[in-house]
Each structure stands twice: as structure tokens, then as C-alpha cells.
Length: 461
Ligand code: PNW
Image 1 (cartoon, helix red, strand yellow):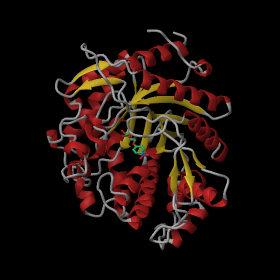
Image 2: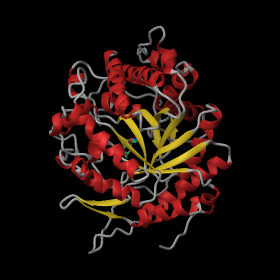
Image 3: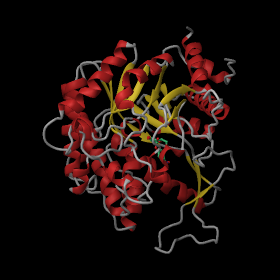
Image 4: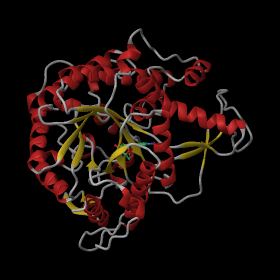
């Protein structure tokens, strides 16, 4: 394969960690097998109109039955690490009570299969599939869910920590809280701002409780972290209103997680903004000490960046509820199939900003990638030059951030293969490997071959 890569990529060190990522509900299928209980996504997919085309994860990529074949595929890409998530409702079907040994056994086999092929397993404990029974008891807006998460985490940790070195507690708590409980665009589909802010705190508390217990039971070189989805939020103009809009957006999407985790307190401006909406973060004594225990790695998921204006198209500065306007303004750049603008410079800006505002925490890019309208040829091969260009510019953006001082240690492409893209169903394809959902045949796209060559080249092997 002809290898055109951005020159900055050649500055990455040979020790840089390369991987691919997936999550349980998006690929596994087999939702009724071996004692798995229902999750909020099983329920949400059955609410008419919530998921594109009425799709659901019942079969997905059938990974539960094809795991050894998929591990061989991962290994053939030449990555060192595979980031996957464990499905809580497989391990503990009701979200409380005893472990389900058959469910846990799947991950045990997966870890062994990966190690047998020389691929390092990276476990995410929660990638959005809350056991339905816990949602029925109130879900993440309820404090008890944090304790349930810590118990579940220990079950997985006890079973796998002899072989798994890196552990991520939560994937993208912003999505769980804001899309799940406020915007309703993801499971469980509620629309209650106060509930969403309570969810933020209990997700962070769950992270801290799980982290504390795992850390106590861990032996080196075990590493722990959390993964946040972030973009670089900038004002559309230099006006006070636009700068304020960018500050508010950045506060509610990024700093409300980072400050308690890494500085031990919620950001004052965000607390004040929330108070104006009569919402209080339900912090109890001692919570922030639990939440701010040291992490070893910050997972960064990056897809796009945004510009913000505090003034609506019609000139209004407040909406009908009296809340200040936050209008996202387009850069005018090309977009992916998700309609997300392609902003690699924002990636560099974000990573440099993180390294300045929160120094001393190594970062790994736990997800980055793009959906495009793939067109397989007669043989099923996808020549996805648009995705390859996206990966190229974004890996280069990481290398540039490193040169500017950001401590980034690795990069994982989202995703290993096409999968269930949540409320977009199977319509949006993020894989570097194509999946034919009728035959379940996996075919590496051109981007996968390109990625393999980049890894070889940077490693110097
Ligand atoms: C991430 N946003 O989700 C998830 O971790 C993946 O499971 C998902 O497949 C991938 O990105 C692609 O969407 C996000 O609205 C969902 O900004 C929404 C947003 C960001 C990330």
C-alpha cells in the first residue's frame, strides 16, 4: 500500500501505544445468552422512534460468537492494545447481587485469547449499558448506583486483574448524563436537566469508589483512568457574549468532569451557572476526596471541535426559558457522515490546553475516528480515502501536540469494525474493518491497511 502520511507522524516515539477500540453493546449481540440481563439500551432500542431504522444490538457484529476470529483480526492489524468494554448486565444481570459466572467467563476467554496473540487488553468497565433493574431504581441520578458500580467493578477486577494491566472506569460520562438524562438522545432517554446533573456527580462518585477499591487490591504495574469525550470549545468572535458562551459550554462538557477529578473541586463558574438554573450538584462530605484520587492515565476521546456564540440568529441572548443562548457556529469545514466538522487543529489545541490546565497526567487517545458513506467494490473492499485522511490528519495532530509539550502516550482508532452506532443504528460506519451485516464477513478497509503500515513505520519494524 502506498504510504502517504503527514510528516509530523514520524516524530512519534517507537514506544507509542497503538490500538483499536470497541464497546460491548455495539458489537457483541447475544443479548439473551448465558444469563445476561437486560440493559437500558435493550429497552431504549424498543421505544419506537428512538433508534434509526428500529435497529438494536440483539445481533450486532455477533462478536460474542466470533470472538477468536475477531482477536485474530485485531492481531493482524499489528496493534499492541485492544480496548473493549465489559457488559455489566452479563457479569451481574440485575446490577446487584451475585456474579454470573458464565457472563464473566466470556471476558476471561477474551483476555486469554488476546494475550495469546500478543495483544494487550485494556478494559473499560462501563460503556453505557446500565442493567435495566438499576435504572428502574432511579439510574445514575440516584446515589446508590455509584455503590452498585463499585461492587460490579470489583467483580470484574477480581477475575481479570491478574492479566489486565489497564483499567478505565467510565467511558464518556458526559454522554451518559447529558444525552441519556437531559437530551434523551441516548438510553434511558429521559429529559430532566436536574437528573442529568445528579447523574454527573454519581457517575464521578462511582468512578472514585471503584478506583479506590481496585487500587487497594492492585499490584503494579496496574494503571487506572477514566475516559472523557472532549473537543476544543472556542468563542465565535471576541465579543463578551461569545466568550461567555464558550466558557459555559466548556464548563458543562469538560471542566465539570476534569476539575473534580484532577483538582478536587467543581469549577466555581459552573456551580454558579447551575445555581442560576436552580440546580445544585448533590455533593456530600468526603465525595470530592473519593472522586479526586490520583489516576494514572486520562483517556481522551476526540471527534470534533466547536465554536460558540452567545447570540441567537435573531439577536436574542436568552431563550424562552430565560437561559443564556449557546449557539454552535460552524467553522465551514468538511463534515463526516455524522455531520461532525473535521477539525484536526482543534485536537492539537485541546491536548495542549489539557496539558497546561491539568499538568502531570499522561493521556492516551482512547477513541478517534470517523463515519463516512463507505462504498464497497464487488469484492467487498472499501477504499475509504476519506477515513484514511481523517486518521492521518488526527494522528498528526496528536504528534504536533506532543511536540508542543502534551504528554500523550498512545492512540486508539474508533473503531475496530463497523458496529451499532447507538441511536444512529447500523447506518453509520466507524470501522476500519467493514462488516457485512448479512453474512457477518469482516473485510479490512484501506484505512486499516494504512493504519497497520503507520504503526510498523513508527515502531521502526
Ligand atoms: C463515542 N457527541 O460517542 C462513543 O464512545 C462510541 O461508543 C461511539 O460509537 C463513538 O463516539 C462515535 O459516536 C459519542 O455528541 C457520542 O459529541 C456523541 C458525541 C461524542 C461521542
